[in-house]
Each structure stands twice: as C-alpha cells, then as structure tokens.
Amino acid sequence: MYVAFDQLPPEARVWIYQASRPLTGPEAVSILPGLARFAEEWTSHGRTLHASAEVLHQHFLVIGLDEGIAGASGCSIDASVRFVAQLEQLLDVELLDKSRLAFLQAGTVQLLKRGELKAAVAAGTVVSDTFYFDNTLATKGELDTKWPRPAGQTWLARYFGQEEKNRQLA
Image 1: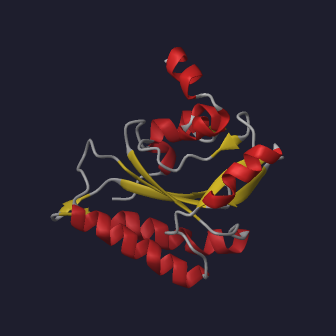
Image 2: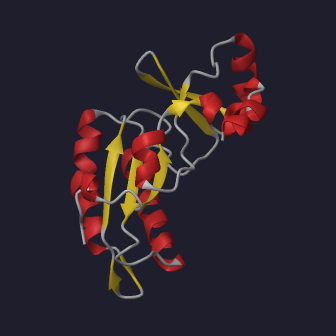
C-alpha cells in the first residue's frame, strides 16, 4: 500500500540508491507514477507492505517501508532490487553501484570514487565538515536528522583522524 513518504514513521526502514549522475526534473517526474505503483503493489509473503519511494536531491532514490505494519522478506527485497534495476535501464543511469561517495558542496551533490577519497582529503577538497550522504542509514528518522551530515561524524571520520574524538563524544 502506497503511503506518502513524509507520513512514514521515524522507525521506517529505508534503502538509499545513489544515481551516477543527477536526474533531470523531467526524469524524476516521469518515474513518480512507477514509484507509487511499485509501493502500492509491493508485498511480502502475500502481506501488503506500507511503503513509499521518492527522489531526493536529484541523485537519490529512497524506498521506505513501515515495518511496524509488515516487514520485508528476502523475496520482497529482491523484488525491490529488480525494480531499481529496471529504473536503471529506463533512465540509463547507475543506481546499484556503490563505488561512489556523495558530498554536498556549495549546494550541489558532488560524486567521488572511493579510491579518490584519500587524495581529496589530502588536497583539502573534502574536510571533516564537508557534508556527506551516508547511504548506509537504516531508518527514516536517521534520514531526516543525519543525512547529510559532516563527514567527520560518519564512518569517514578515520580519514580525518577523528575516530577517537567521536568515541569520546559518544
């Protein structure tokens, strides 16, 4: 069953898929009916799931699921990945590739290959205060409050020598 994304509770599970390029306005609008249809028809072992999906920052497809109603099974998660793969083909964009990191710089999403991160930190183009989109977040509450957030407050802290500082603050 489709639920408006902003109506999902904070504990709703989210999956974040990052595009390899910005989606154009017309592309994002063109997939909205398909996102709603997927959420409406998504089931787990015959149970209707309360789900939603939306495009954020022109780079991220986020699928949300209220697991308080019904949880996703392996088969239903596989169905969602197949749906995302179909969107990749439709839009000619990569959504399942996890090799790029996304940062918010000067109001724009900038992508960086993982292998380029150390050099970017050394050059000062990525600093601990640079906002990072941590796509490993698991809940809508985290998405709402910790996405994006300063790279030094994420798993990237080790690149800035801040792991110990973060542990002390916890």
